[in-house]
Length: 355
Image (cartoon, rainbow, N blue to C red; front, side, top):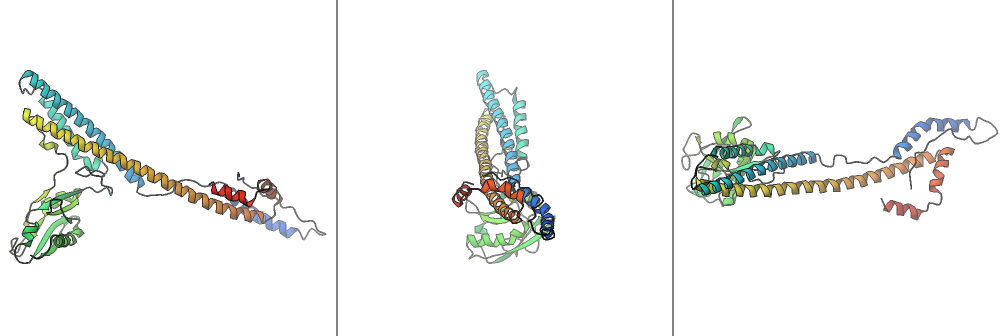
């Protein structure tokens, strides 16, 4: 059934012995006519569209697109490096020498890739972490260990109150942890995690079973340069804070370790480049999968929103139509009658089910 915009006009006054009896009805209808006409016309046009299904959708999709561009560029550079390494080895084998006539261009390719890799977090919109894992909240994190903060050391000797100082939000924050010899690994993790969470550092148990910490990559320079511990003279010196070294977990790709000095170094670098290419390939698949997931979620949300909009429009149209019909306007009834004549309840139900 096609909905038409109904237009009201001057009502037909009921015939009577005097003109005064019809006048009030005509005045009332004229007063209501503009609002009713506009309401019916508005209700006759469904308002479709997706309205704020997910406020973070654009951020996630934009980050995924940035990450794809970064990965495409990085994979191309690695292919060029791999080709150059293979060609270099072949040339050296034919010449029977390790001459370095084209070593500088190869070094330059590696330098360019290292520079690109250093921009990973920003260039990928925060979507790719150091291990090329997907970071859905857009805040890549870095894992690290601290010398002296391992389970064996923490359980050795009597209890001790440790104070940890680290720069956070532009100022030095101090947290305290009481360590005791009878504590389990999990309990030690919980104590350090509760103490350090306010400064943005979380404690976990690493895959190797050791005490591990992690923080946002952007906070790492401050943590590395300011982390200090003060003890009570048992595990750490008494009375003053002492800087302790924090060691970051290595990233998946480390171009600073690639060398082309000789045949052996080039062979090792070729293997590392191939491994890096595989890391990037898997990351590329993960990002494209994320984009497909977002597309499916958006389509489903759009269908749900459209169904809700249809239901709301139908309900509003019925109310507006009833209000207009109750006024007895002749032209409105003339326009509506052909649409509803011989329209049974069953046909209406069948039409609504098809929406």
